[in-house]
Length: 98
Image (tube, rainbow, N blue to C red; front, side):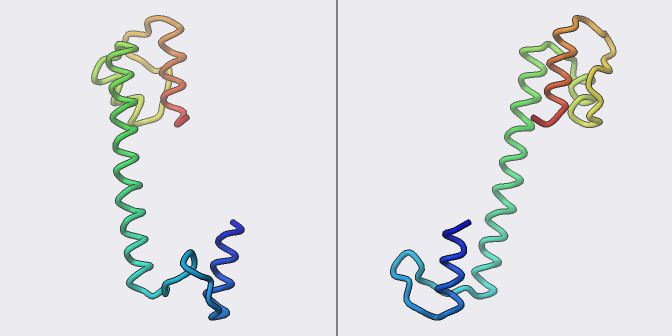
């Protein structure tokens, strides 16, 4: 937060901030940052969705339908086979977004 405040100070005052605070902010630069952020946000979300799905299918042993239910509807503990309590706890953990 502090480095952002220092950067804004140099940007708004027009003073020379050295190499660390060089450059201009224009609409094109803001657009590049926004597109980069959006792409990384989507890729990161997709990656962790895949990791959660893989762990639920392989480690916990959920079926394809149960995995879709847990990750899609966020209703942990509602399984078609209702096996062990430990499995329910893993599903609750995975569905909570932790």
